[in-house]
Image (cartoon, rainbow, N blue to C red; front, side):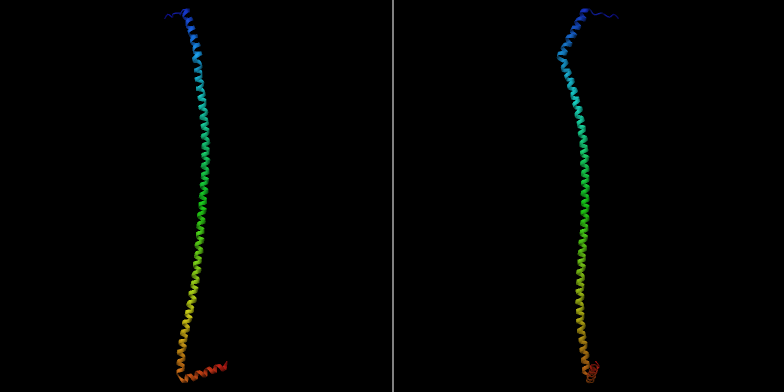
Length: 164
């Protein structure tokens, strides 16, 4: 293989063309390319910063959500406790009211029984008194129907009166 050595003129014009191309690239393309790379770098930095900020916000939101959830649980527990206390109070009040009504009904029943008892006793006394009068009337009639018995009765009564 034979390598051909380029001539001085070709190397010279290639070098000049390369320098002109380098100058043109530097003048017109280098700044926009570096600017685009710099913009891209800034965009990446901003995106990373935004991602970090979003991560921190998510952590804060998560912490806030946990706090709100804990508060809601505590509030629910307080409401359940209040509801239990209210239920127990209502049950106690209902029991007390029922006991009071039962005591009142028992008292009224006792008063009614006592009243009925007195009425029955009065009726019984009245009936016994009526029967006693009837019996006494019959006994007196029987005693007074016979003259000998009448005289004996008068004598017995006078005898008792003199002894006293």
